[in-house]
Length: 512
Image (tube, rainbow, N blue to C red; front, top):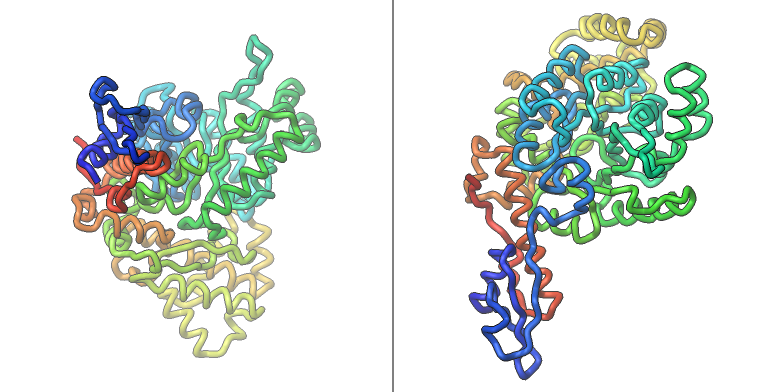
């Protein structure tokens, strides 16, 4: 290896020349003009972090980088996290899912005040809420009223009318006859069959029903029938929280094939639908690999949860900073407990996953609290930290306010009561983690994928190892800079230059 090879990789923004030797091998002249050598030379173009990904994406959304700081529900992706993501050149999503409407409204006001009216590179989170009828409509109504132009739709198993309404109300016909968007849906999916529903125009029946209800005009429905519901599809591979644990390469390829099918079926250009990659995006190698596969953008999640702007309390962030790649487990999801949906959580330092699975086993057995053996009833009371009856009273009061029919059913069905109390425990696990309740540390629910461990291994021994130094800005800039250098190393290797393995790594540096 020559010093020129190292320089060409460590300074990817500089031009480099590949010089052919008489024996056919190539050497590198970093930053050298053509006149410096009489041998045949080939120019290697610079690599800028800003050039990684689909530059139409960054232009459309007003971002410097094709980099998204993803939403983490219940306010873990705080307004401050969004603000810092935008200020460092990325796009940020507020973790508004699961928060009460007044809190969401206050968070949106904080973001708009800091970034200024009309700032494009941010959005908020909408999560599928089948257990809370009317919640999706209320959140979409708020987003429309507050001018939220980007929505990340997560955990959806099917297309819903409110997502379609949000898209359709932002469509317009431009002078050249094309349809333009004002409201952008980022559909976070992990299965091709779900992705196809968002890639295609809305079903005709759904549009007809929205027109009949007065939610859309016939002209708005007509425009919606011409374009995909979502032009941004986020492929969620092995991530924290809701996940199908799909490998990134498999999922990206599957969604790319789905895009080809949908584009051919509806007469779209494939470039009308951009696919980004999330889940496992925690190191420069992962970012570079995502862009090399063709991802339009990358989205980070769990690693930002350990940042100082996170809504997770310091005890939870400290647990995340100690995680290894294998320190994760699957646990029942609070919002879709009865359906058997799972979320990926941190295992190290907590008992949450094991306790959640045991609760689900009781439910699946068909038992109620009253019919369980005494030892199991005692275990439930100990985990809840109160008697089952007290927990049910609190649970019922909440369920009665959001879904009275479900509360009435549970009054007559002990198995349903057990499920609802278990859901409350699972919900509180996330709440205790956000609040940093030390006495409930064993019950912290911290959404976490194996990428957190890879991130910790990458930053070990660097300034980013201490949790107090982890900021959204430093994480984003280091990932993108590292990805540019690794991309340059790959260019050199593909051209025939011998590139040592150590030059495919990048150590974090402090950006001022």
